[in-house]
Image 1 (tube, one colour):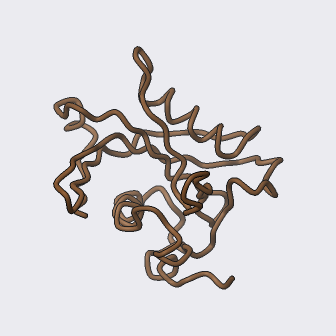
Image 2: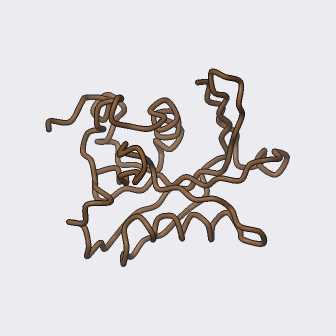
Image 3: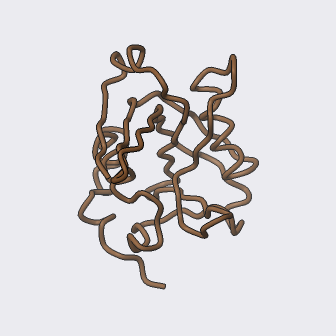
Length: 153
């Protein structure tokens, strides 16, 4: 898999970008949700509906993942992914700071101090590339080195 990150200004020139990913944090932890089909941990994500803005899709995707929560979202970048079979996809990435999360004990989403093993994540290369790009949005204590260590299970 190859990942390309585009500055926010470039995203208007990209076509075919119909997905939204959200890098959300709760305190010092990155929020991932459990995919219902393959049981891997993924970033909250959604698909742009006709007439829907990318920010609306990001808010909806994060709301579905964390339930009743108080959060702010900010545009980060656009991204493109080329799979090993040549299939291309792309979308927009937003960052979010979850301030209140009453349903934090829910099974579908979890805040990770350390990322799960790569084998337990969907598209780990994309998650790490976006996290690196979002470094300025996250607390300096959350570094790629720290998040790169497997979490104990």
